[in-house]
Structures are given as structure tokens and as C-alpha cells.
Length: 555
Image 1: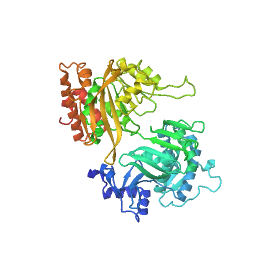
Image 2: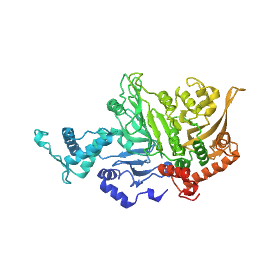
Image 3: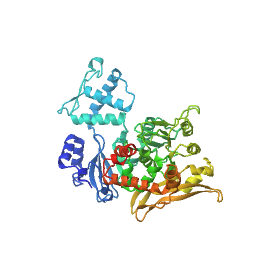
Image 4: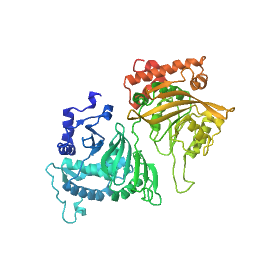
């Protein structure tokens, strides 16, 4: 654990002095808990603590307290938010009225960010800070918002203003009761069942119960409001909605009690604003530096592969981490249902499907992939292949366009079966256009839930004699040692037959020297703790443009 991750007493005091709601919370829990530790960044070791007791900040003025009392069956995720007392609530209602009255005089706001800026600007105009103004005093008893009183000011303490600002953003723009989760970078999934405590998937603690609950009687209105934010209103007529929230998170809503017995059921998958880097994935053990080096060479030389696994196995995270291996001067074409891919390249054609009331107005993944073949990209990346559009993916590969996509399958055999069967129906003889399949899963190992690449399997081609597609395992994960083994070392079909021969190597075995070099570079980056996504990206691209001598660390 890095000492810099833990806050000093001075830093804690500064936080408490600045945020009165945090000070109040610490005072309230004093009787039942020892003083909690404060962390800027959560150490991984905290995952194994039986009775954790610490607080960490999120974006803005929300803090998260993770703790477990001796009498508790499980750990609790407790959000600490600015709260409004009775007097502040009355002032807040006055604030809302004045905002509604003065809004027409302000510039229009299109995006949520613009609306947030507008709200803050209006609050600054309306509220006068007075640290003695604790009580509520009506602006005017009669004709509160008559034209001549439009310039009335609300007197409030700085703490009251902070609470009102948080409430305004939370209710009018943000996630309502889910706002703390939207601000927490450590969350992956949010699971809401009406009338029950919300559970979240935490990057350190996995599934954990929270203190936030949406009462069943409020859940229907909440679900409708949330679906409207996603641009796909849920109703009895449209009981299931799968769409994207304004911040890029993916939401799935199941609305009526006839389907969801307990009331509305909601799952939100959050996506990091900055993708996870390949060196961080190596550091976590999800894949080895050897697998990453193998993919680095494959992407440099235009090979195609699928990242496969079950739901929530980290397929998209891994795909995003691998994209910087594509040379920086290439044109990338992405086609998705929801915007999950992150491409750092300058020439990135980012396209999304569109649902419309008429068939003519809709644009599906099949349409986007057909369009890709006419736009001359260097690499085509469909976010996820599910059905018949898989046929177009193979057409693209057959015409010389390298493709990367994610796919739900647990083994290379399943991938082949699903692509050669209904509804995709790729001829078995075409399967050799796919170079390899990476299988990644969420696994349980010694009581811990981990994401691991289980295998990388190379596709050799169709064998007419047995009427089957031949494959060989290049890399394999050994659970007992938690190690990845390069089984195809000095015997890789892709490295020797598909890359070395096409790249002009006189001796195909020379490709392993290049593989060893890339692996060593990645190992050195991990040793030097170069984990920032953009720093890793520039590191790889410097190597492409200027060679190993230009790298900022010794290799």
C-alpha cells in the first residue's frame, strides 16, 4: 500500500472543515465506530479486511464510507451526501421558484453540462452568503415573485448553499437517489430492485450492499424518469428498455409488476471516463505481458480476433486497452449500439445504431458494417457481435479489413459453432479469416472474484477431411499457479504463418525475437508503474514512430 494513498491528519481536517455534512456524519457515528481512516485511493489490500472502516472521496462533495460492525453480516457501502434541514429546504423551494422565473431571461442550455453551468450561475445571482442566515425568512409574504420583486436575494450560509447546489444538480440533471453512485469511479454495476437496498459491484469489494433504498411506491415514477433520461421511455406498452444514459452508462429497465414481481428492476453498467490501460490489466494479472505482446504484434500487422466471454467478464475493458496497439496513423471505424469503445487515434469514425418508429428510419449494426466496407477504414471494430451482422464481419475480414469485436461465448469451440450455425451461418471454410479467439472470464479463485484471460486459441483453417475448423491453443491460464503459459512458443501458427511470412522475415522464427522485445517493453512499463491510459498510449506510439531508443525508460 502506498503511503500517499492514505490522507494525513491535516488533509482530513481540511476536508472536514470544508464539508459540514461530513463533519456531522463523523459526529453521528462516533458512538458506534472508531474514527475511520481516510484514503485518496483505495488500496487493493482492503478487499481482504474482515471489518474495514474507511472513507474515500468521490467527485464533488459526496464521500463513501465502507465499514462493517461486528454484529453485521456483511460490509456496507454508505454514501455521505450534503443534506438539507427544514430551513434549508424552505430556502431551496424559494430558489427553485426564482430559477423558474428568471430562466427565460438566460441563454438556452442544450447539454447537461451547459445546464449545470447555467444553474450554478443563477444560484450565484440569487443567493447571498451570510453565515448568520441559518433561519428561514420568506422573501415576501404576499406576491412572492411579482415582477418588482424579481431581484430578491436568498440569504444562506455557505453550507446551506452547498446543500442546495447538490440537491439542484442531483434532482434536475443527475441521477436522483443514484447520484452518489454516478460520482464514484470505483463502481462497475448498480443493481436496483424496488423496495430493497441498492447493491453495487465495487472494483475492490465486488458485490456490496448500500444504504440507499428506493421505496416501492416511488420506484415506478423513478423508473419512468430515468428511462426518459435515456431517451427510451419505459411503460406498460414498452416494459423493457435497454439504452444509454447521458454519462455513457448503459441502463436496463424492466418495468411492470406483471414481469418484475417486486416492482421496477434496474441495472446500470458504468464505464470509466478514462479507459483502463493494458499495463494495468497486466499488473492485475488479467492477462500476461506475453499475451499482450502477442496481440501487439497481431494488431501491428493487421490480424483479426474476437474477445469472448460471459457478461461482465471485462470484454469491453480489455478491448479498449488493446486498441492503442493499432499503429497511430491508421483509420479506425467503430460501430456500436451504445458508445462503449474508446479510440485515441486521430482518424476515428465513430458510428452508432439508431432506433426509429419506421423501418426506413432505423439503422442497425448490419447497416453500419455494410457502410464500413465503403468507407475504406484500416480497422473495423464492431462493439459487440450478437447475430446476423457477424456474417458482415467475416465479409469485411475476407476483403482484407482487420476486425476486432466482442462476442458472448465461453470457448473457441462455441465461437465456431455459433458463427457457423443459425442465424450467422458463416461457411466453415471462411472461419480462417479469423486469426484467433481470446476467452476471458470472471473466475472464483481462493475466495476472490478475478477476471482472467483463460486462453488464446489460434484458428488454423477448415479441414475438409473431418469437416471441421482446426484450432490450437497459443496461451493457457493455469489456475493453480495463477499463471499464463505460452504453449505455442516457437510453434505459433499466427506469428509464423500469418505475420512473419507476410512481414518479410527470412526466417519465421525471427518473429519470436520481436515478440520477446515487446514483452520486455511491457514488463518494464509495469515495473515503472506506467499505468495511465494516455501515457501508455503515447509510449506505444513513440515506439512505432521513433523506435526503442526514444522510449523514456531504459529497456
